[in-house]
Image 1 (tube, rainbow, N blue to C red):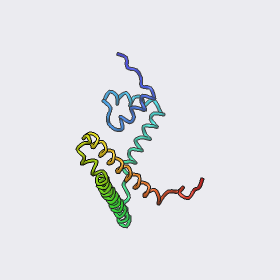
Image 2: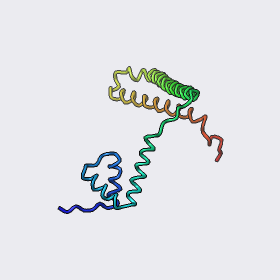
Image 3: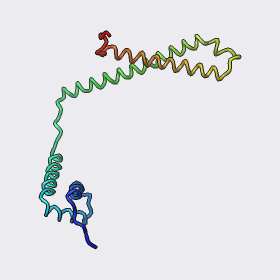
Image 4: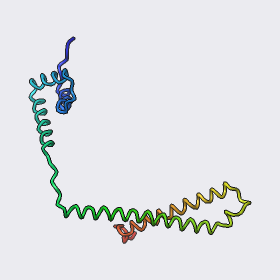
Length: 153
């Protein structure tokens, strides 16, 4: 069985496998033989080994405590605002749903109306309320940061 010699392209693909210790012993031997005869691939191999060593030697710089305090303040503010908007939205939806029910009370209590119609009207009014609250919340949030608010056509 005749083994084909590795091309530079194949060798460069295997270089990462060698560095990460993912090659079989046969593949490693083929690559090492190629690296002995190819200065271009040898340079690439050395560059990748150097890069891996530099990455291993890197350490994260410790952040001063003052930055951590500021970070946690921002996280809590975002969480509080998010929870506040959720509770606001749920409360508004419940109020509007109750108002819709009161307006349509006679409709829902009328035994002459089919159940399917009552369910359809209930789901439609619920969807309308949720959509209204969603658009209202979005408009309130965008209003403060809209760059084009004062632009006239």
